[in-house]
Structures are given as structure tokens and as C-alpha cells.
Image (cartoon, rainbow, N blue to C red; front, side, top):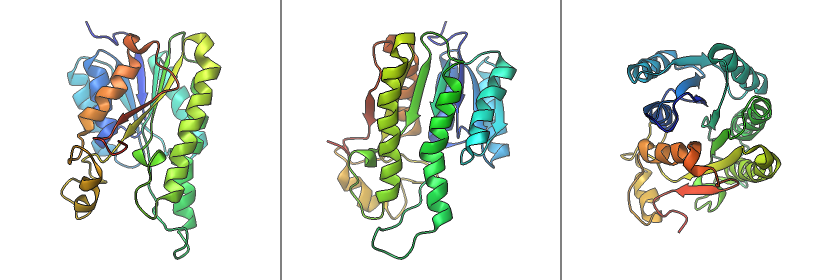
Length: 248
């Protein structure tokens, strides 16, 4: 018996990295899991195969989280296929680094960053809210830069994550009367394809963490799963830092 038996979860951006680890961790606790992907169909299929091997129902849905309409459509498609929704994990993210006083940033990349990291997350939460039951769970993945930027060129990215955290606190207030919790996980540097632990940048990043190492996707996933379980029923409006001491 798992802590999430008979629950249905959505993990956006679930074909790799933190998203895939989170999907697998939720399934390990008995949840049926839907993942979304933008372009990595083969990887999404592979994750679904792993999920099904754990004895749960699983499906992958193509949805570009930069498009709020697709983000909303994902919610409704999952409910149509699975019959309900209990847990929403907003994991999909995008980074477009650019200095405020540097050369003009790629406007399309900055717009996509805002849409994926904030606008579409809000749209998804608002679409999911009337469908979630008493005791539903909403968990969004933020970033340590929302609290401590630490490096140049991250202003716009930090702004999207700070906005997400502020919105989540407000949503936690609004939905508390239904027992729906809204929380944020704030990772630090995590060893993924987007930011591998053996990259050149690692020598710059590692000294900023107390533990002196990158995190593993599974370590972030563990925090998400906790917030999704009944044991976290009194946790809402919180930011859980899993950052190796980046924000210490």
C-alpha cells in the first residue's frame, strides 16, 4: 500500500530530469501519473514504460507549456482520460539568461520564459482548481534564485520564479477552505542535462552551496512527494528549499 494509492497526478515536463524523477517517485507511492512533454516524445514514452512497470496507469501528453491554452487543455485531457485529478505538479521550466545592462535579450526567449515559468502555471492552477477534490495538492517547482540570485544575468528568470512563489502563497490562502494545499519546492543546482554536474559552470556554482555538490533529481522528487501526501496536510503556502545550502 502506497501513500498515494488511487490518486491521479500530473507532472508537467515529465520526460526527463526532475520531472521524470518526480513522476517515478509519485508512482512508487501508488499514484497514477500523467506527464507532459513538448518535443521529447521518445523520452516521454520511455518514462511511461517505467511508470507502468511500477503497476500504475500512466500516459504522456504533448503540450507546450509556453502556450496557456495548451496548459489548460492538458488538465482537461488528463481528467478525461483518468477520470479525476488529485495532484498537480508544475515542473516545466525554461531559462533565458540575459544581463539587464547587456545586449538586447532575445525577446522571444524572454517571453517564453515568462509563459512557461509563470503565466501558464497560473492558467493550469486555475483550470485545475475546480476539478481538484477536498485535500487536493498543488506543488510548483521554483528555483533558489527566487530568494538569492547569486549570479549576473538572472534578473528576468528570478522575476518569474519570485512571481510564482508570490502567486502560490496567495493561492494557498484562497484554497485553504477546501483543504487544498499549494506549495513550492525551491531546488538549488541539480545534476540534469540542462545543468550537468560536470559542466564548466560547476566550478562556479559549487562554492555557493554549503554541501559543495549538486543535488540529484531524486532528492528534489522526494520533497514533492512529501508535499503531495496526506502527511503534509498542514503544510500550505510554504517554500521547501532543497538546495544543498545555496540559500543558507
